[in-house]
Image 1 (cartoon, rainbow, N blue to C red):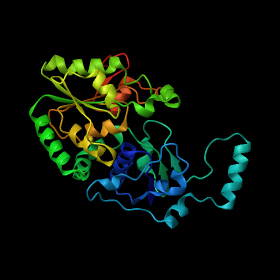
Image 2 (image 1 turned 30 degrees about the vertical axis):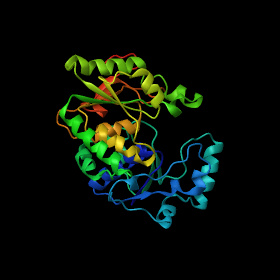
Image 3 (image 1 turned 135 degrees about the vertical axis):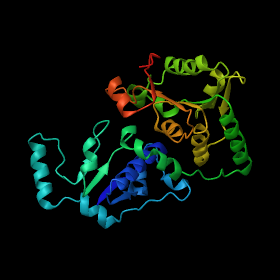
Image 4 (image 1 turned 90 degrees about the vertical axis):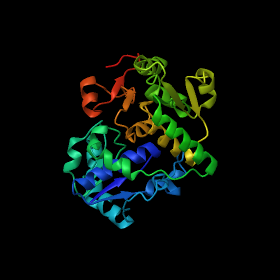
Length: 309
């Protein structure tokens, strides 16, 4: 059996679930560990998270039991002693061979593993690109909690399908905090967004951009021309899921270095879609263009200087 930990925000949870579906497709017996969302763990989090996959309508998954998890990750006495000795000798490898921890962008070996507990975020498109059509059908959006806004979203989604529409996701908020700027900042730069928007405008001067961000004041300051931009500011809280639905109806998707906007693009079923993302996800990540084009097939990659690579 494989047990896969679900952790983090909605975009990360969706990526972990995507790997879960791919492993099932490979014939593995796989279950999900949801214990990360328990109160004992969440009370120590700077930004507490909730299990949000349950927001999707009838999403199928099987949760592991505590006994099944313990059977994989609890070390016996010998392992604990060996671990302490290894640490004293300067070895950094885990003494528990039944726990696999993501350490790089893509682990080819993950599909050969069994009888293992897996933890990581697995953002790389290459993991589950071939099951994306199945995932698009499985992630069924629930209705908006406010019927009037549900109708507003439906009308807008239909409009997006008929025009040259492009979603633009701008991640600010926690990305601007001092502890995150060094790792996540200045990747989805002003030059990145300008270049991405110009890419679509050069193809169709009538392109209309839909701005998705939690920083609505910033959006209103920078994208005030209503003939060119529409700011989506009514899907909040758990209803933020509806923003993914709207993004998926656009002809083009301009993503931040954010798993949330990746999924707005991934769920796009349009045959004429064009998906744009930052070359890098993090500043401490090596992102070689030839490797990224392999891992993100058919995506348009733009670096922080606005260069399409």
